Amino acid sequence: MSNQKDTSPALRCIGFNVRRTDRVLTQFYDEMLTPSGLSAPQFGLLATIAQAAPVSINHLAETMTMDRTTLTRNLDLLVKQGLVQNGEDEDRRVRLVLLTGEGQQALERAWPLWEQAQAHVEHALGRERFDALLNELATVRSLVS
Image 1 (cartoon, rainbow, N blue to C red):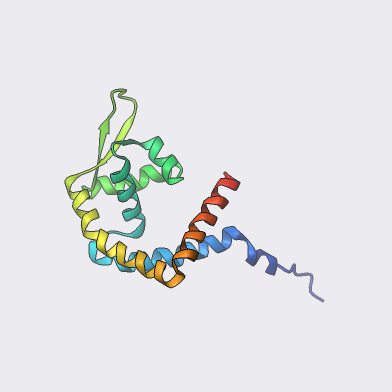
Image 2: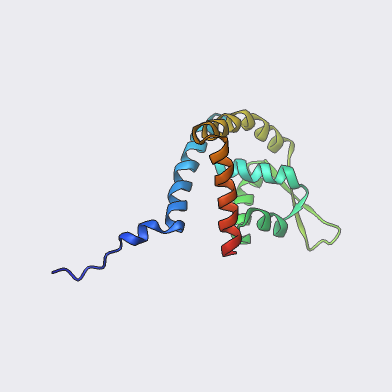
């Protein structure tokens, strides 16, 4: 007899399954974005900054549902690559983030590649299932936050 615990129910864990799916999707988008020189997370961060800029680090972290430390580390890499720059708000204690010209160009180069990847996923799922999935994910986020 084995005293080993049956852990098979854990395979239904939403966190586990979302992380598995995230890894597959990130790899897919990374491959599609390779010609642009951006990774999927970099693309998402640049697109979010472009939409909200100039934006404070705190607001950007809230928008992306990221902890500030992780976001700062990711932003520092983009600053070193010349894609993002820091600015100051009227309140000099607030650090603002905005795209550089090079960052805007990188986003524009990556955009058609991202559109192709996005269209592939939307087509594979079908528009109704795709929209339902986005709604369900938003519901899960709101339930646990």
